[in-house]
Length: 234
Ligand SMILES: C[S@@+](CC[C@H](N)C(=O)[O-])C[C@H]1O[C@@H](n2cnc3c(N)ncnc32)[C@H](O)[C@@H]1O
Image (cartoon, rainbow, N blue to C red; front, side, top):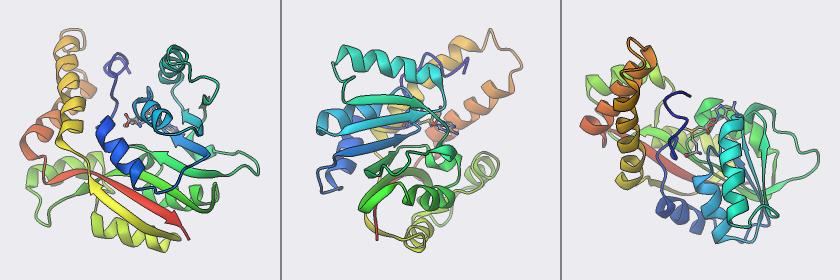
């Protein structure tokens, strides 16, 4: 958190990608549940695109506090609320959602686990939208394999995720790769932040790991990337 706290983006996302994914949902949701919203980059986009009631959840109070401030500034706090809760403990009684939105967050509890657990929170034909880091090549380099083997051992191909989505009781409506812009907006400020904190955090394993990750984004992006999946409950 010492590294990430001041950064606006805690994952690769952009207004254009969020908007593109939302347009693929193809219905006008009344209730949206966002999971792992961070400081709310996508929350604000969804609020602008809809008149829906939105519940934005994360387990990091600090991020939700920043999002609350933004919601107040944009007079959205009557329709968009935040809730500090773990994605593994989402419980809204009998309330269901038209759309569940999870950008760069479902991997935390495991994609297959999230697909299964969150399905019961959707209305019939409700839509789950999530983005996940995937292999974009059949032949990734050793550098990429070694890095993700320890940082995201469950990284899969798009085809594998598609099969898992279908097996979990969804129809895959659309899928697309997140833009390079979203990556740049994520890792350029992160690189800058690493320069700032390195003198204060000498010998920090976290700094070293994140620096390795940023170097890999720069040299090997294209072998892997974030992929949006728009999946309808069937
Ligand atoms: C990679 S960030 C993505 C944030 C945001 N969706 C974005 O795309 O910028 C992952 C988010 O998941 C949150 N998170 C981590 N573990 C969580 C948990 N168990 N339950 C809910 N949120 C969690 C983090 O606080 C963080 O905001």
